[in-house]
Image (cartoon, rainbow, N blue to C red; front, side):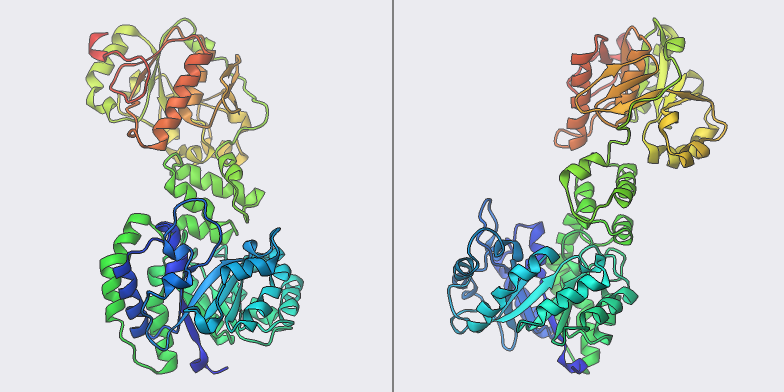
Length: 536
């Protein structure tokens, strides 16, 4: 087909609905539909059609005929909806589900196009829906997900199955955002072994290649193109409609009016993007490079418990263990680096035994009360333990530094090499590249094992509930037989922050497991005993 036969499908209302529960303001949708017409868009996929109703979602999660009939869609734009293949390949008889989803013939429905999103394992069972929908006058498309991770023989088998049905557009989606232009062309050639009909592509922008992959697909005969306004979509998002419209207008040698679209981006979509944060970044780039499901990145970025080093460590874990399918359990496991039995060779008693311990955190209260803290140290002679590279108080007053997060250690190795204190870390359990990076640093090897809801103390190692460095430091102090543990710089992150809740669980579990008093001597949000450093 010639380049003038390209169809641009904007699926902003469907793919972007994950950020606002498909609850778009009516005035915005009216402006959006008008802007799509001015920008030369051929098809609007206005949302999903579904029978699932377990929580509130807006109208664009269901897109009933009654609702869609209230929208004014200018000619010649066609209106499409997407259904999930999982809803028609389950236990219910397929035809009865389809009748509920599409009670009206296409002639009596605002919907022109139905697209079915399928995982590879659902495809063959979902294909008969095409015949049923075609008989009722709908255009039918299939979106095959996670195809970029499949071998040539598998893709050819999918194409052969599709060739037995009258599909208007056979799409493949770059679900992991891992495709390159070369891979895009290769996958198209595999499909073309048996599929001779029209094809479409849905690209993701993990590595900033969504537009490049889209244009490569066009050069290789693809005629259906997906995009969203500002790339709005889960995680790194998609090819951007405003850019696709420019490229396609050049190919068509046609003039389009982008003013309404750009105005809508300025007034609605860009502020929403600033708030929700879709779009590519280095984490999404790595997820695309290693074929990791982008939902992992999206979930970690929205969960403040995950620091930068946590996210990088999780990506490395998923790269090795596999992360093509999102799993909450797999995500939680990425923060627990020490599953095997703890190994350690240093006895904390040699320094701590019978003395109080002061653990210095990174909160701003340390700087605010630095003089008082230094006087407290001079007077009470505690063993002073600083977390990671925190250096607010005088270096001469810090006895030990503790660090347990592998990626944080790797990032801080140069700083640690210049700091005068011994470093306490589970050296025997660290990867060789981290051990090498520490170099000739004076290191005390105290072992660690992660086990949920546990504080168990040994002489040279401990079992702790998570990978937080405060858990490691508390266990170290207790294993060393501290008489009391003081905290400074544990201010908290705000009542609604997940990090605050996680830290509180650590303190509560330690208090119930270990018979050593823990007291904050600077201001803190945590529910722990508190005294003022100025009165001690």
